[in-house]
Image (cartoon, rainbow, N blue to C red):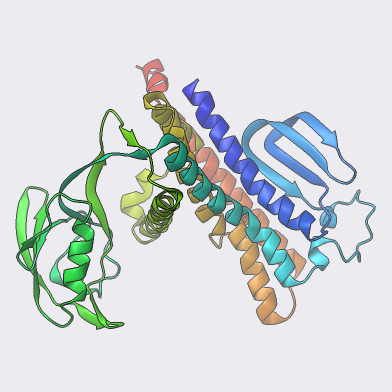
Amino acid sequence: MSVLAAIAVLAVLILVHELGHFLAARSQGIHVNRFSLGFGPVIWKYQGPETEYAVRAFPLGGFVGFPDDDPDSDIPPDDPDLLRNRPILDRAIVISAGVIANLIFAYLVLVIEFGVVGIPELKYEPGVIVQPVNTEQSVAYQAGVKEGDIVLAVGGKELGASKNAIEVLKTEIESHANQSVELKIQRQEENLSLQVTPKLKDGKGHIGIQLIPNATPVYPPVYHRPRNVQEVFGIAGNRFQQLVVGTFQGFGQLITNFQNTADKLAGPVKIVEAGAKLAANDSTNLLFFAAIISINLAVINILPLPALDGGQLAFLLIEGLRGKPLPNKIQENVMQTGLMLLLGLGIFLIVKDTSQLEWVQKLFQ
């Protein structure tokens, strides 16, 4: 049942994404002739006044179809309500609406999780954890601070095991611009003392690092009721920001350090397996799983790659700069090449992930 629940979550996220495109188009009066959840053989369909709605056999996909390039469409090619005949801004809204829908959905899921399920209790350990250092030119990087370091003290002041540890560290850094500050750091089993000199920026000291609390959820999970609605929206906003930033950083590391991070690539099989494990431990984890995957789906789709929303937005940008679109032949060749590469990558990941499943490995033992 947990596997089915994880698949259902993915199907809902894809539905949300495609609904974003669909609603953005229909709200502007743009013709839409197909709305499909899934791919493969049609198992159910309904023909509306203009749009055919369908559910297909494999739910891990979907699409919104426009009559622009449909040879069977009886809509005149010069109809102003065809997508291709709309201004660039109108088309950009339709193309980006899927990404926006996934981001909004992720935030609302987090609001529901913290508002209905409750706020998970955390067990705090001393210090704060350093996230990826912003750039190699940052003060922290040059001083020797690395991702995963635990800052235990700043300027001789112990941070302690508290949710306020980050604020204590930030206050000390911001108030010591252009002054040397000692950081006491734990790196695995090693204790270090590093000197940093925060740079003055916007009237405050900065060293170019991001921080997260050194805390883990209490297990078995313990939740407390939020004090008010503002607390729910605030915590959901902070968690949403952390997930979005972390997702972009993860993709950035994949691009800049592909050789060492390629083995972390996962396809739909691994995603379903991860979701199933979370659901098996605690069904409420599916909400957090949905938020994470929804954000990942948004980030993936906004990448400027052919056959993705970001690729189509790149074509619009080029059209805006040139004053006219690229020739259809070029766009079609680029999109078809990109689609084949994405399909190839998808098939590779499915085979790779399936071969790593425990029950599959046992068959070959």
